[in-house]
Amino acid sequence: MKVLLDDFDKQYIAAIKNGDKEAFAQVYEHYWKKLLAISFQHTKNKEMAEEIVQDVFISLWQRRSKLEIEHLSSYLATAVKFSTFKMLDRTRRQEMIRDAVLPKDDHQLDEEVIDARFLQEYVDGIVEKLPERCKLVFQLSRKEQKSHQEIAEELHISEKAVEANITRALKMLRINLRRVGFSLFLFLFL
Image (tube, rainbow, N blue to C red; front, side, top):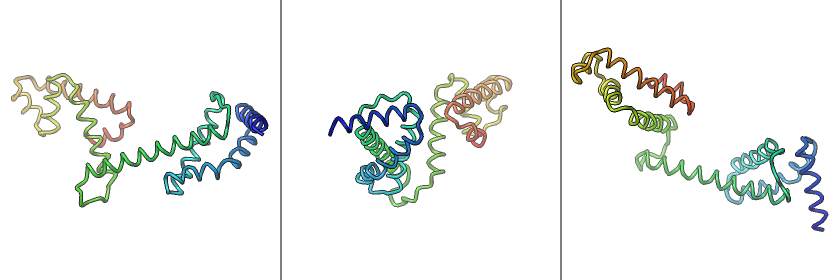
């Protein structure tokens, strides 16, 4: 019987690698409920389990030409278990962050507040890496709301130097935030 199963797997794997959508649909129909049961057993959440199984199938299709699979059922079951544990870990981390960020009596999490805090921490991290003078000028300008003239007088530099340092700091922030997709946030933040 094992030989037949291996032949079944090999035929479907080869067909999927060649982009056979019909074979993929048959594999999907054959394994969907079994994989959903595996994921649901760990998540106890039908929607989350469905999303995980869907993502595994999407990944299978997108990476079909690169995958080296011997036993399709074992591969899919392992992929679903791994994805389930990854999702549960991510969910637990989010819950830990919520508990750490918000007071213990207020568990109504406002995602915008958390996003703003993460963004602020990220920006602060970028500012910390700026050259000392540039960092100081930027902090005086943005955090202490001092004018260019006040900063220039306090640091004994010209207003042009203040302006140049702020421009340099903003440029570094834009570059770093653009890399992680926060361009819009930068506009709103500054």
